[in-house]
Figure 1 (cartoon, rainbow, N blue to C red):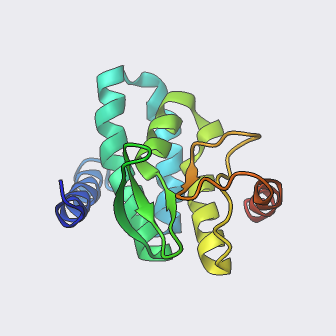
Figure 2: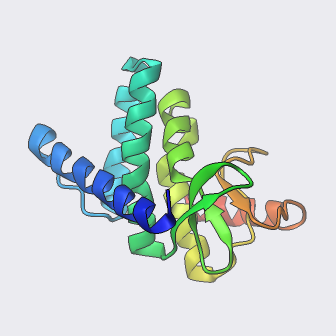
Length: 168
């Protein structure tokens, strides 16, 4: 699938999430931080009740919405990372965030893998243009962000400290 086609597909999936949540739950998702705050709590409520197939499908749809919200608020575009074999949001400096994976992790692992913390970190680093952090997940987890250059060393501790301060 080309990146242009994927971009349209992710937009369609995200719009479907907005439409379904409005129709079924009376919730208006607006591609903004308050919407991600609500969605984070929703994932915590429903995740434990889902089977593997439901988790996979929901992670893709909600991941598309999270990705589109990151694009709307932080910039970037959908990009397929052949190195990691996964879709990501790629920022101008080449750094990538993986919203589909992040939603899946929260559905499976609960609040410790919060999409809200992930979203806050994306916003923080987009604002400061210091996207040198690989991750802003709890201690030593390296799956939320990945660098095209694989630079995991020195900036990690500095970035983790900045992220923790931003999400308090």
